[in-house]
Amino acid sequence: MTIYQGIVTTKSGEMVGFTSPTEVEKSVADLEAQLQCGEMKREKAKKVLAFMLQGISNIIHEVIAIYPTAELNSQQLYVRAWDVIYSLEIRDIRVLSLIFDGASCNKKFVNMHTKWDSSGDFIHATRNIAAEEERPLFFIVDPPHLLKCIRNCFSNSFGHKCTRYMYKNGEKISWEAIEFLHSISIKDKLKTHKLTQAHAKLTAFSRMNVTLATQTMSKSVARALKDYMNDPRFNGVINFELLSFILKVNTFFDCLNGSGDPDGTRNKTNEYLKPYINLEDERLRTILKEDVLKFFIDWHNDAYEQESLSKEAMERRTISHETYQSLHITIFGFCAAVEFLLRKGAPSVDAKAFNQDKLEQYFGLTRMAGGASNNPSYNIVRGRLPGDHAKKAAALPKRKGNTKGTRSELQVNQDPLQCRPRKR
Image (tube, rainbow, N blue to C red; front, top):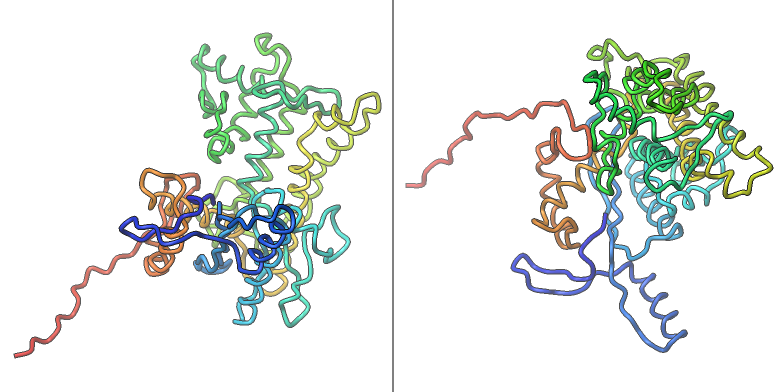
């Protein structure tokens, strides 16, 4: 999360100092600056790196570490991440996985580890060196963030920035289909989807909205497009590969999003949202790896088999390599983590525990604490921690912001407190 750069203030607004990275990194940076140009320049923190502990079978979610950083790199992240993991393992808190977004430093951090096993083309698990016993540590890219990345690649295919010209098996996968569907549905006064102008014409803000991404890459959109497949007004942009792409992404997100229902009794329509209760679950065995991931592997291979095209042109025919890598890491890491828990005797595993929603809610509350500014100061970020620990679930928003929120009701005890005895 970006913070107000450099200045630490008191509640009255008085400046009391500057933020900086750890003393060791500061000393090294100062030494390099002195050797290069003879100047000693104090580095200012621009962002904060937050680590949140989130339980899988309980409701624990606590921010346990905050580091001010300037420009975070993979080496710094490696030191901080394992410092936090060691601190938790020493206190007998077993760390199962690390969940993060698709930032480049996070990918480089993952590549600094050795593979736990030979499965998968990318590193999705490594040995937990902080644990006493032989135990893996799984890596997962935040599924809502990954969904936005896939939708953004799709939106730039023959649309918006036009940085991609996506084809699979010779069939065009174009954002024009979404734009046509929105406009033609309005003219026909027949709307079987949730697309609006905000879905079709993306802005810098709407690109970050998870709800818009989920409603675009949905079954309802795929069904609506299928109904218009032979309509000449669409200029032939609707095809089998386009519909398959939308449905595969929808299936992927359903399997990894969950419904926040550990018993599986609330959801009765979508089987993919139900918790995982056994190792023979078809989502673990076939749907995610042999159906969803295979679709993207075949697409990737088809794009890079076009020898008549340049390397840059081949890259534009499919989703970005960073998103492709994140998809591999997430599917293999998630499936392996769920199987690990079920083998250890977990009665059920809800996929909702494997995302960053709680951390996003924490960042949202912290930005709100800064008043009109979206970027709080480091003093505000650090000062909120004791209050958030005390308020617990009461500090989390219910259904607002860029997360789905929580269904749990806040229980308030209205019994009067016992009065103190009067001294006479």
